[in-house]
Length: 105
Image 1: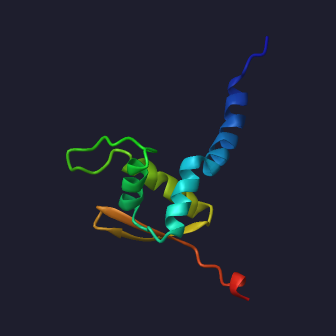
Image 2: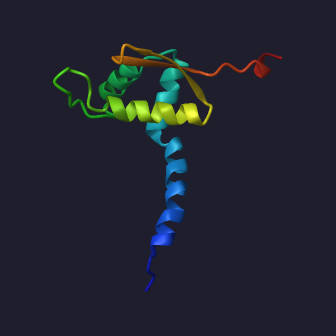
Image 3: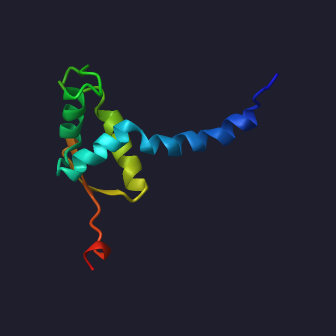
């Protein structure tokens, strides 16, 4: 019988987090950014419209999936695939794909 120790659980955790960056949701978010949809709120609304996220809402009418989308976007910032531009009065966040000048040469 194979048993998992606490040490094994901690060893496997980073592997799971790195593989999540290639999930269909991550891919779709990246595709939306490539279409110049830079608002986290707008990205969230598009994902809801496409049936990829739940349409549940807070009392402010902001999608409950909004924090999840922002976490994914922030992970992409940490991996240097996109950049954070601004926080619009804590009502929305703006991101964009990093420009690479090397591809133009």
